[in-house]
Each structure stands twice: as structure tokens, then as C-alpha cells.
Length: 105
Image (cartoon, rainbow, N blue to C red; front, side, top):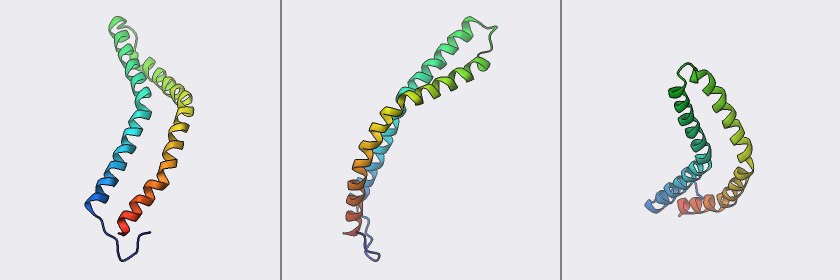
């Protein structure tokens, strides 16, 4: 698809690669958003507990709580990740062929 001696990077090809990269980043943020929101909410709740109960060491309690919550969220999210990966995998081949064809022109 891309001849060895005819590699040509055009502005339109670079823009398409940048668009694909931004789509990957957006997908990653969408996949991580529930975990980020839950862990942020946990941090806020632990901060409130630290202010209301100063005798309790929040760092000792917070690490296992966040770790357990993170593992639980990953376990619950695996079926949703499967759907996202399948959609991404279906478009990967066509996107790769489009980039290679654009590089070979």
C-alpha cells in the first residue's frame, strides 16, 4: 500500500492522523470518566470525613477504600469496555488502510 521510495506525508494525511489520535484520546477519556468521577467523589467524601472526625487517619482508611472501589469499578465496567473495543476494532482496519493509501499517493 505504501511504496518504499514514495512515502509522502501531506497536510491532509497529517490532519487525518491527528483526527484519529484525538478520537482515541476522547474514547479513552469516555472510558475512564466513570472511574474518575467515582474516585473524585470518594476523595471528597473522605475529605469531609477528615474534617468532621479529626481523630481518624483518613490516609490509612482512604487507600484501601479507593483501591477496592477502583477494582470494583473495573470489574463492573469490563462488559462496557468490550463493546467499545469491538467498535474500535471494526474501524481500525479501514482507518489504517485509509492512512496507508494516503501515504502512498
